Image 1 (cartoon, rainbow, N blue to C red):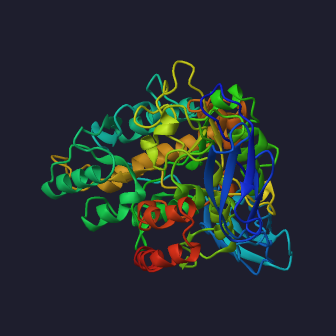
Image 2: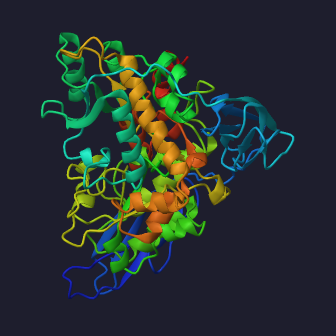
Length: 592
């Protein structure tokens, strides 16, 4: 159902109207303007002034089929991804994909020998002593469905022959104005691992006789394709003045094809100690070669995509906090629709509930169902998944109720101007001057976050979010005037030891609490306690890696095909089938 509102002009005129439908077999309308769909088709809803029946207004409504029959399927298989070797005192993460998509994602983990390795409920395996242990994951829905992986625990060995880099300064480039997000010695450093990282940083700099510093990309290296072009051009001319960059893996294939970044596969196998989680390793891999460096630390924020909302608007109209609904386990497709309906009934005429690209909502809502639209493990494109279609149907209903500007990023005017409650976006957007400025709605601007809603028949524990692409560290080729004794291997080794030392320092901190750490970090972006709690829910075991948004073709290719499914009622299967071959061919090229 949807509820229509009407205003009789002038504003001083009598406002009572009578509602009618052109075809009650398609849709009916009650005295309050609530339209209920009966069968598929198009119907005209008419409002007639009680004071003057000659004054009418028509509104066209499309009634589409809603498939509420999606059921949680029985699991048939589990795929484990992750490292099969671990060093004493370190941890690795194993991920379990329960197939088919639509099956319950809840699993139990166990170790055959906890004196060798232990595993927690999220698949984090920690090496205790040298030896072998079998890690088993079992479906919580059907304990006969299980999969095992043998883990070898190796002794900790301090790598010998530390290279002397003779005071060389390794420069890492990042976005302008964002050094404080990465450099622990910056007074405005955001993450709460500051002292653990500083201690490891100083120890490695002394040990290798090296300095690590951050710089900013120049103006001509603006984010996106211009940055990739700038990197490629300088690599070709051997004019890079930096050694490493923080860059989106969205452009990995472009950089690799141009020979602009270093293949670190062998370095990782030698020095990595398995400290690159499987999803991050997939994200940094192109044609079976690894190009990104370890950087992940406990307590980081793993959320990439989500719904960001105007806390002031929510409170102004006394609406429920979306994050509170999620935290209570109520944020489902149907509750999301009800929220849109309830909010729309109280908003001003020029305000809307939702805004942004429907395509991004669809991708996020599919991920919330645990569905990888692009599966790099099984090399499948899952656009025809029942949950994905149900997400599209839900969004079509939401669009007909209340949707502002259809666009992406900072180009969604209705959200920028405080006229829409929600916009799809990325975690780094809030309080970033290029996306959602800290004063976007005035001095009291406050941002909230809620993940995309999940299907009604899945529990909160089964919902997931996409890891996304995030910032990744890459080593550059074509560095000008670098001494011969400063090798790529030496830089990789020094950087990796900073990461490893930071991990050990965090693990040895008796006061470290991952929930507290995640909330502190998120508080630099979000202004609502419930939103911080929602962010902290998504630890490593609640992530999936689906490169559809950036890695395989990208969402920009999907938008002109999928947005009309929501905005115009275009046939879902026709839309997704029209781009299937593009995504599948690229998937095989990158991951086959």
